[in-house]
Length: 269
Image 1 (spheres, rainbow, N blue to C red):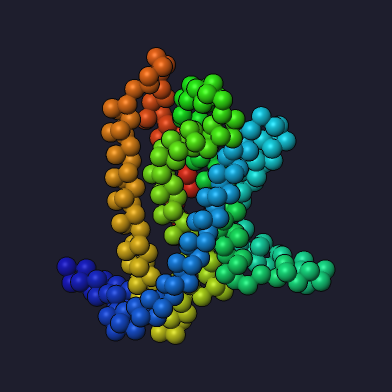
Image 2 (image 1 turned 120 degrees about the horizontal axis):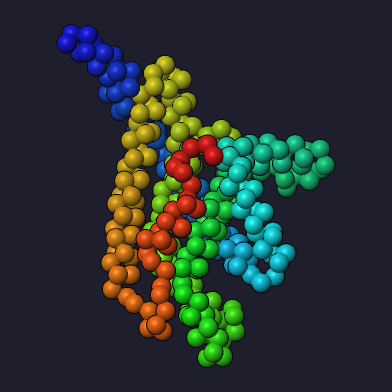
């Protein structure tokens, strides 16, 4: 029992040092505007690009399908950490050697580009699964009313697909929050970078524990929101039946299709 108490005291001294927590927490709060900027920009660009890629993958024009498929396969297979290094350091080397100075990106821009290009690949598969879950009779009915393919997709199919993909996109947003921490490898002074700097100053890992708490505070409400949205969608799908006599794709199968496209949590891909 005494050894257990000694172990707990050691853990508290190294990871839950109250004096260091009081010093670290205000420092980490100062990084939140930068983290939010990185998060919002990456989310907007990745979702917009992901939607475009999903429409390209569903296009009848074969070169567009090939390009979108190659993009999705490449960036889903490329670890995000390597993407960050290549965009920040690799492009800078090319820019310095060729005189194309615009390729030398500041850390925030490089982080947004890397996060957006990686998460666009995952978002594309989520959007594609959502669009394919809408019964083809919806498109046929819209076309029979004289709408073009673009109008049918914009006014009929996409509004329904967006409702389907909101829960998995919320899960992806949660993963994006955690993956912003990887931007610390390119010296972006965000939350984890600041925590590691403070850890070096005080020679104690407590700042990392404080950073972990901040990430959890961000993500738990979103996790609960995603759960509620999914339950609400499932209840709505149970009460809705196709009116054209066809069999709609079961909600559970749609959820399974979309779940396979999601990132597997924050961290190196």
